[in-house]
Structures are given as structure tokens and as C-alpha cells.
Image (spheres, rainbow, N blue to C red):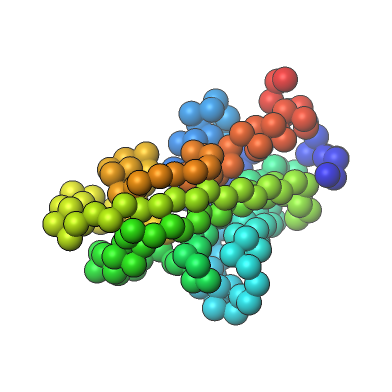
Length: 205
């Protein structure tokens, strides 16, 4: 792990390179003061040319988000994070419509899939620390009637998650078992990130 230089200062700004409400709520809930600045990288282009693993893709996206935002905030600690859903060899994107969300959920129904969440901390373009974790989720074999009711109740929010669900909400009803860290499922490996921030004196130990 690279030691912080000019960033090794408790007064330094902490930036979340994301517009994700879920991630900013996690940081705020843990008492972490931060600002948000979305990276707006071309994730679609990166995914189209990606030939590596789902884990590698999550790490690349997290790192690129942090590095892009880092150029706009000299001296700040920038947190980039991304999540990839792997269903066998297939990588899912966020559904672009409710109809696509329905198709994805029909495909995942009764099967196991994996959520891979990566986080990268960058200062002045240099990656200081990174961590990746995964969780395994098995969707139950819910009925078509349940699926339609779920989509009707969740509405447009269904397109804001890669899996078309939020485990902290009504999406919990979709599952038979969940194995792994809750924060990883939500898209940010929070406990390892807090540990890193403590080792670097950003948080009190």
C-alpha cells in the first residue's frame, strides 16, 4: 500500500466519485463527511471491449472513476466504487427499461448469481488502495404474479440497480439465500474502506 503524501492530512477533502444515493447514504450513515462528484465515464464502451473477468471489470471501473474525478480535486482523497453482477459467464448491465428488468429477473429467478463490488481510493491520480469483495445470492423461484406485483410496486426504481432490486428494500423478497457482506451487496465494501481511512489517520482509531 502506498503511503499518503500531501493527502495524509485529516483536513483533506473526501470525494465520492459517484452520484449513487446508496453509496453516499452508506458513507453519511457511518459518519463520513464527504462530497459527491460523479465521474461520468463511458462505462458502456469499457464493457464492450472488456475481455477479462467480472472482478477485473469492477476494479477497472472503480479505479477509472476515482482517477477521473481526482484530476478535478487536487490533494483530495477520491473514492471510486463499482459493482458488477455476474450470472455464470454473463455480466449484467443496469436494465434500460422496466421490460428489460422483467427479463433479467426472469433469467435470474431460481438461480445463483454473484455481486462483485470494488473500491479504489486515489489522490492526485495515484491509486493508494483498492479492495474487492463478492457476495453470492440465490433468487427464489417466485411466481409470475409475484414478479408483476413487485415491478408494479417498485416502479421506475427498478432500473437504478444492476440486478433490478435493492436488498435493503422490497427486493429482499426476491431471495432464498444471501451469502456475503451486506455492504458489498449494496455496492460499497464499507468496513475495509473505513479500516483504510483509519490507518491513514483520516478517521480516529
